[in-house]
Structures are given as structure tokens and as C-alpha cells.
Image (cartoon, rainbow, N blue to C red; front, side, top):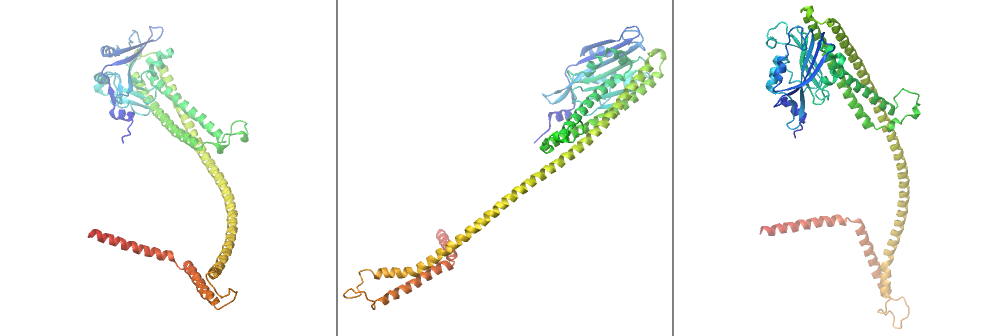
Length: 482
């Protein structure tokens, strides 16, 4: 029986492409000639995406709105699960996506990583074929993704051009959960920093994911505290132990199932946090490559606050690293508590089983005592029955002794016998006939009774009956052969 889930089928098939392109765009321009950054949100399709791609390369030091400044341009596609054919379909045509690899400097594994499970972040080199041998083009890009099963899934590939102080990228999100637009457009004060600091966008994505993991660990902590209270393993508060719930009344199956699930969840959270740390490490390396790239350009083409922006971004990255290390400590503490609570629950289970065994032993002792009394009563009844049977046996034996004589006397007393001519009561010569008949008849009755009681008549008749059956069966078979 094939038990493959639709999601497993989608992973095996890989990402599919749409028949028509429909993507969102985000453009942030910051210039000294403007009072504040300009944020433009739009959309492109098969007809307009070529025009959007043609605007990716402004003149050095020029933002699209004019004047020295910085710019961020993102193309955002949607990748949702299609239940009709069990596939993950991206809202862009395959041929257009192939062209994006050249214009947006995407890593070759971009499409294949959409359906992977964990947070990924790495710096990737841009080949000379992609940058057309222009020394001032980006030499490294940065790839970052959140897990696909996450509602706020996002996968981003971004590059930064130090010559024009502009960043370009391609992102994939779930429909209705555009983390990039929701986060950036919600904080207008970060527009200028985002446009001049490409590292901020990956840090925003990682920060939101760290906050999500933090909430998961906090929920685990609260659930562990509830289980600890039910098991009487809490040391918080002034509540006396006698007022706490009876630990032996705990639903041990539900508690152990919950602890097992929390243990698995905590282990996954530790994996997620370590993946974020790896991504932050790669992001820092990418930031160093951008910083060194900027040092090779003319200072007049850079923003005056670029060094400060790098310092702020480094501080933000260090803060996230410190937060991840704290989360790892909390996860380790949660694992220790889960282990301790599991041991306590197993001890309570053993105590409850011991209590049940004691109760069963006490009940068994009561039953054994009652059985002993019943056995004594039955033994008394057996003794009385034996006495009764002995008396009956004696009565039966006496009856067999006197019964033949009584029978013969009754016959001789019948008027058919005439012992004297005048009918006088005399002991005549005919009395000998009485004894001649009574004694042999009594001996015959006693012999017959003894033979019936002592000889194994049932075995003899059973053996005889089997031999007769064999003879009858042989006769029947012989008649059938004839």
C-alpha cells in the first residue's frame, strides 16, 4: 500500500512553473535630494517584466529618482502548493525564471531549495558569465530562506552593487503572507537604511524567525510548568504540597505523550536556532565582502553614513547571535526539565502500580481466607456425607441379606401351600424348603452385587463394543467391494 503524502509527491516532483507570470515588485529609493525615502510597490506580468528588468542598472551613484543615493529593487513571486496535481507552483514562467538567473544573479540551486525544510543562509559566488566580466559588478550574493511549511515562508537571493550603491533581489513567498512587504512597509524609518544596507533585509527575516522560535520555547516553558504542577514537581509559590493535585491521579499516557512531543519540538527548535546562527555567520561574511568591495570604489559615490550603517548592521547581527545563544541555553534547560519530569512520571507510574499490586494482594488474601473457610465447610459436608453414605450402605447390605428371606416367606405364606391337613401351625418337614431356597437366593444376590461393584464392566463392554464396531465396519467394506 502506497502511503506517500501529497507533500512528499510535491518534493519528488520539484517546483513547477506557471503558464503566466504574475509577480509583485518593491522599490525603495533614497537620495540626498529627497526629504525622505520613496517606497514603490507594484506588480509585473509577462508583458511588463522585461521593462522592469531593463531598469536594473542605473548610472553609478544615481538612484532612480535622481541624485546621489541608494536603491533596493525586489521582484517577489508566489510559490503555493497546488492540491490538484500535488505540486509547488511558482507564479512565473520557466523561460522568464531562466532569464532572471542572468539578470538577478540567482544561485543555481534556488528553485530546488524552495521545498527544503530548514532555515538556510549562505554566501554564493557570482560567475563571470553572469556578471559579464564587469569588475565592478557584485562578486558575491547572499541566499536566505525560511522553511516552506512556515506561513511566513520567504526565500531571498540578493546582491549589492557597490558602484551604484544599489541592491537587487528575487524573493519567493506564500500568497497572502508577504513577510517582506508587511515588514518593510510597516516601518518607514528603515527605508533609507534598507536601500543603503542590503544586510538589513536578511536580518529582518532572521529576526522575525528568531521571535517565532522564542514564542515556541516560551509556550513549551508554560506547558512544562503546568505538567510540573500536576505532578507536584514545582517549587514556585507558597502553595503547600498538600494542596497540590494528587500526582498519582495524573493521566500518565497523556503526560508522557505531551512530554515526548515537547522533547521532539525542543530538539527541532535547537536545530532551527543553529541554522539561524549559521545563516548569520554567512551573512556577516557577505557583509565583509560588500564592505571590502565598497572600499575599492570612489568615496564620492558612497553615502556619508555608510560606515555607520555597517556598524549598526554588525550590532544587529551580534544581537541576533546573542539571542540565538540564549535560546540554545533555554532549549537545553527545557530538555533537562523534560527529562526530569519524564523520570518523575515514570516513578509515579511505578508507585501507582505498586499501590495497585498491594490492593490486589490484599483482595487476594481476603479471597484466599474466604476460600479456606469454604474448604473447611466443604470438608465438614464431605465428612457428613460420608457418614450418611456409610449408613445407607449398611442399610442396603442388611436389606440385601433379609430381602430374599422375606421374599420367600411371603411366597410360602400364600394360601396355595397347605402344610397340615387340619391347618394347624406346625414346624413341619416343609420348613426345610424355606431355607433351601432362601440361602442360595441370598448368596446369589450378594454375589451379583459384589460382581457389579468390583468388576470393570464399563471397560469390558467398551472394548467389546469397539470390537463389534470394527467387525461391522469390515463387513460393510466387504459388502461395498462385492
